[in-house]
Amino acid sequence: MLKKLLFPTAKQHNTKPYLCRMKILDGKKASQAIKDELKIDVAQLSAEGKKIPHLAAILVGANGASETYIAAKVKACEEVGFISTLIRFEETISEAKLLAKIKELNNDPDVDGILVQLPLPKHISDEEVINSIDPDKDVDGFHPVNIGRLMQGLPTYIPATPYGIMLLLEHFKIETSGKHAVVIGRSNIVGRPMSVLLSSNTYPGNCTVTICHSKTKNLNDYCLQADIIIAALGKPEFVTADMVKEGAVVVDVGITRVEDSTRKSGFKLKGDVAFDEVAPKCSWITPVPGGVGPMTIAALMKNTYHSCITKN
Ligand code: GUN
Image 1: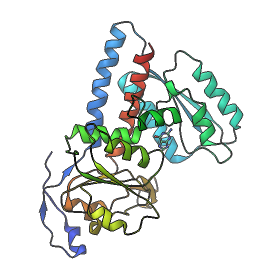
Image 2: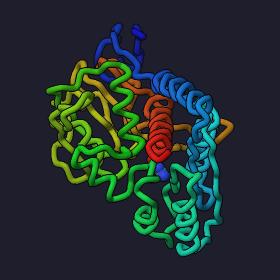
Image 3: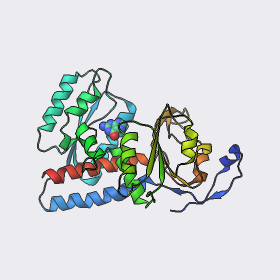
């Protein structure tokens, strides 16, 4: 959808307000299309008497954001027709008990995908937990075996956020070949796998990729050279208009809760990009919320579906 928008905030940045031809990378719309396809595929499995995908999700403690993400994952399972099991543990659960539960799920032939919502309490090692999940059921794609396969360009479970971004670029037919992509952030969950995917010999892909991080000098100079910016550093409104080239594609992975007493929830969600001032310069941009977030869920659903059909 082509949007003609007047951005009055442009005034604050010493540029004239102008009509721009920026388009929204609408993650709600793209994720709905993916879920609609999956729903048909699941109905087909059911009609053929085949196994229905089953996702087991583990939530430890009661972190507000994690509760929201897990609820969205369970709801998406219902929407597409998967079976889901949500296993909740108290914040104080021991690592040994959590590992025992994962072992049980690894050995349960009915379970196709296992995810343990991060972050975990400090007394539990993320690494031990991730390494204990059967790589064939690791629909988050965090296990070293799956990360290694990703590095080698082999079929694998791609971590949901970078996979969701690739699906979003594909859905809106964004040109990526030969483009310079700047990924801001080097996390194992987003930045690193994103850089591998964007540089791979695929579509979307074939980008020249620069990874920037907290120690990068002259970060603005790299960003100004970018045709595609992936902002994944977790700092609200870090990317400002002076860092973005005219016509750039900007993907905002950030989703930070910031206090807002005017809202019933007491917070609002902010991305890593100062949307109002950056959007007028972009050819395409993701909103927050409604951009990368829903795509992450759709990607997880795709991984779970594939886990089921390859094992059964
Ligand atoms: N916490 C933040 N993102 C993710 C994710 O993609 N998977 C899991 N399991 N936890 C997360």
